[in-house]
Every structure is written in C-alpha cells, then in structure tokens.
Image (cartoon, rainbow, N blue to C red; front, side):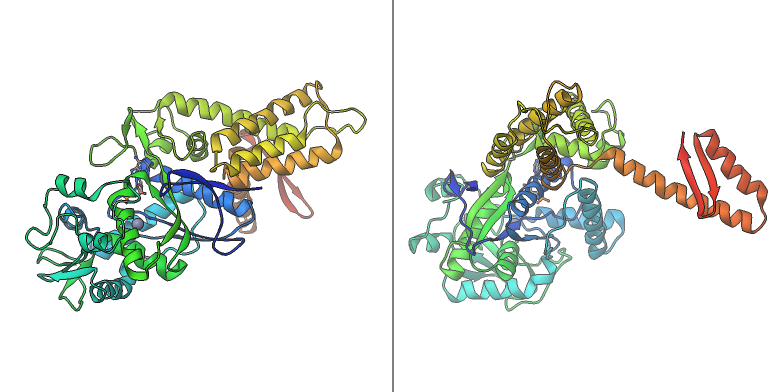
Length: 488
Ligand code: AMP
Ligand code: ZN
C-alpha cells in the first residue's frame, strides 16, 4: 500500500516517504489562546486529527506535535493581537497567564468533545523563549538578520541574494511582494517592508515581555513554530500542517528561518487544510461570521434549527475532503445526522446476522477493503472512504432482509474492518452506547444512595427512590449479590 500526500510545496500528490521508515514526525500550528476557538478552527484541528488517526492506523509510529501560541502573537501589520490581549486582560480583569490558562482549558474541552486525540507533545511558546532567543542570535551571526532599535528582523533580500527562494511555498514573487506591501509595522526600522520580526522590542503597553540581548521584548510569531518543531522533531521533519490561511506569511517565514539556520528545508510535506465557511463566507471572529462549538452542540444559536451531537458535526466535517472548502448549513447537518444514524443502525444489525458458509455472497469483501484503503491512502480522502462505508451499509441491510449472505469468516472481518474505520480512523462515537454508559453510571449512584438510606433506616427515602425509578420504567431488583436494575 502506497500512501500519497498532496504537498503544498510542490503542488503535487506525492508518494509519502518518511525520513525514518515506519515513523512520522508531524507538526501542526496550534491555537492562539486569547479567546475561544470557533467552529472553523475546530475543522482544521479535526482534519489533522483524522490524518493522525489514519497514519497510526496505517501502521506508522507518529510523533505529533501541536503548539499553543501564548506569547504575544505578533503580526507584521501592527501589534494587533497584543492589543486584543491587553483589552481582554482589562475586560476580564485577569492576569495574562490566567487568560492563557482559561482558553487553553476551553480549547482542550472543545477538542475532547469532538473526540480529537491529544498530540504527543503540546509545547507552549512562552515555555520556549530561550530557544527563540538562541535562534535569533544564530540568524544575526550568520548575517540573515539584523538588529534595529531593540528589535530583530529577518533580512528577506539577503536570503534571496544567497540563492534561497522566499515565496516558494505561497508561489509569490519577491518583486511583487515588495510592490504590494505597505510598511505599517516597524516603520523606519526595517530595511525592507517584507522583512519580518524575529524579536520585537516591547512598547510600554506590551504586557508579556522577556529580557534578551537586544533589550526587553517578545518573540516573533513565526519563530515560535521553528523553535518548537526543530526542538522536538529535528531540523528536517516529515509533515507540517495548518490552515490554508497560514501558508503566507507564517509558513513561508518558517521555511526561510529553517533554511537560513540549518541550510536545509525544514519540512518534506506541507499540508494545508481548507476553510470552513458559513453563509458561503469564511468563518472568522473578526467579521462576526462565526459560531462557537458549544452554540452548535447546545442549540443556542439562531442559525441551526436544532442542536447536534458533536459526533454528527465530526461526521459532517469528514464528509468533505480536508483540502475542500466546507460550507456548514442546517441542511448539511441534517443530512449528516441521517447518514450517521443509518451507519450506526447497520453496525447494530451486523451483530445479529447469522453467517452462512454454504451460499456464495454477492459482495466481495476483499475488493471493498481495497477500495477503502485506496481512498484512505489517496491523500486521506475521507468522503470517498465514507461513500465506500455506505456500500457496506447497503450490503448489511440486504443481509438483514435475507437478500444477501456472508460467511462466518467474512462476517468477523467485516465487523472488525468497519469498526476500525468508523471508530478508530474517522473517530466517530456511538451516541447510544455512550448514553447507555452514562445511564448505568447514574443508576449505580442512585442504588448506592438508596442503600445508604436503608442502612440509616430512612425507608421513606429508599422507597421514594425505588418508586420514582419504577415510574420512569426502571425496576430495581434486590438479590443476594446486591441490587440490579431492569429497563422496562
Ligand atoms: P488561530 O488561533 O487564529 O491561529 O487559528 C487556529 C487554526 O484555525 C489555524 O490553523 C487557522 O488556519 C485555522 N482557521 C482559522 N479560521 C478557519 C476557518 N474558517 N476554517 C478552518 N480553519 C480555520
Ligand atoms: Zn505555526
């Protein structure tokens, strides 16, 4: 089986060859934790969760690193994010690190809700200031960067003069870039408008600041990813991911920093996830065209007619390829819910099918499995994979109606393959089973409380618990080994 990955750097689907056979180093740009993530952010992280799960399923040992941007997200068009951060600390009357902690916890909760697996390493930018200062110093020493008024900038013209190619990822031409850039930030400090900050002098208003050889300041946003990816994955690693909007300037600058520091391109395969849109426009906080994940899941919003379980949202996202734009809508969610219910129903039916080794089945399990793996290894094509899963669903319904047969061996194979694709690779959750688990836990608590009431001779309360549960169709049965329950 050959895995093909679309590489944004070459704009081609390439056969994936990891640096170390059987192993994958993958870095994904993480969130800026100054406010809640919106559903669009979730889509990008979910796309890479699916890629991580797929790589693992295909047998690779993956080291997955996803950072937390918590150190003053510097942009080249002014200190926008710091302003946002200052405003937020005033508004919420919190310490900067309290803000960071609050939104990091929220981020984890949201991703957990959508069943995303945690990365293997989740480094923070503030935890790697020393590494960022060291990189900046190295770039000054090698002549790729210069200090100016307490800030340090990367010299893009010098980089190009040495035969390196700024713009190779975003396919931008440096002359055009110069012509089209307005110098808003670092006016008078930079040699050229395209030069980007590696270290920025802190203005009196800047709240997160560190000592450096160039005075008090804070690191540039692009540098944090270079520092952390190099530290945990090496000077060159296999996969770097992020949303499409990070291609330029963020990832372009990461390439430049990596090449200037180490003489090699930092990443072999650049992967970019496409955007989630709503009302056909990109979801974004700045335009107000966004929905928070909890608003969709709780139903507290004006856009969707009902609430949707997080796993339905996940299923909806995966029905689009990660490189395609996905427009979220009420109809799309309803259709996903319907499809998901049918998929779960088929899985349930499968457990009650009696195999038949006598008759020949009209469904070739081997061909079907090959098609599923072809889709997965064709640049992680989740919509095609899902379409194949629904061929199996159709077959399962035919089995139920006794229009088809399956051998005992194939039945076991179909069950384990479907379960692996649905739960391990797509990361879907069986809502019914989860609910049953919760119900069981709740009933065990009530049984325990009833036992305590009986021990303290509070028969009024113990009877009330029994009777009220019975009225809800839950019968408690006291036996020699304790109390059990029956759902009527
Ligand atoms: P940020 O916290 O702004 O750095 O964004 C975190 C991630 O979400 C980045 O990889 C962005 O590319 C991604 N992102 C932002 N907006 C969207 C969107 N509308 N759809 C998908 N991904 C997005
Ligand atoms: Zn990054």
